Image 1: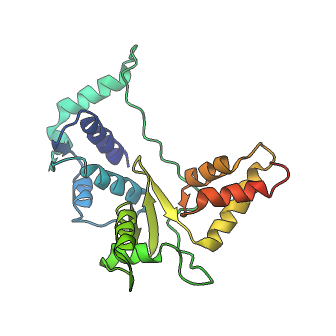
Image 2: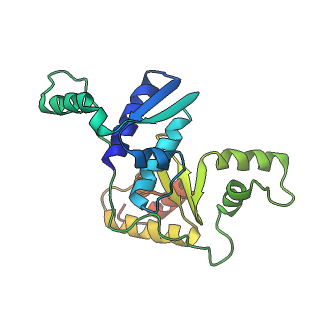
Image 3: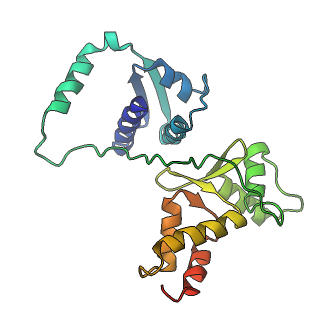
Length: 225
């Protein structure tokens, strides 16, 4: 994963410099084949980085990858080693990428609504096969396309992209209720507001369309908040 972190940092620097055409030189042949979808991976840790890199691709008009074996790139390696040994006195530094590894992955399994289809059913269907629901109006089709632009699916699990290119797993009504209870119980009495509860849920990596309004109703019913 260190190769992906280094790659992401370099690409983000190019984004901040408004570069539109980029040649990325890396010494990992595996990384190149994965980001170009020539090789697949089942490692859920790497998948998060992989989709992050793919999202960054959209910031460029043209981006290419070139493999240079480490043995042919000794000078760059030496510079990187020396740089890591120097204590910089100014404020120009690169923030590290923080990826939280939880005991249980958010990539587990979708939870179906016992009373019907989950709220993201039509979005997932449109992302997979680009098909609108039957009798959908033009405004509903536009809304569906807009939602689909910020979503992607991995097998049957649906994810929502955030503005900073993070990923939130979409949950149905049953799982949303459980999350509200679990996270609220853990912070009950700490001047919890609905907005605070909603932020906690999003930071935990979960999303549903009414997360904010549901969180507000949940805290309003609690006498300790």
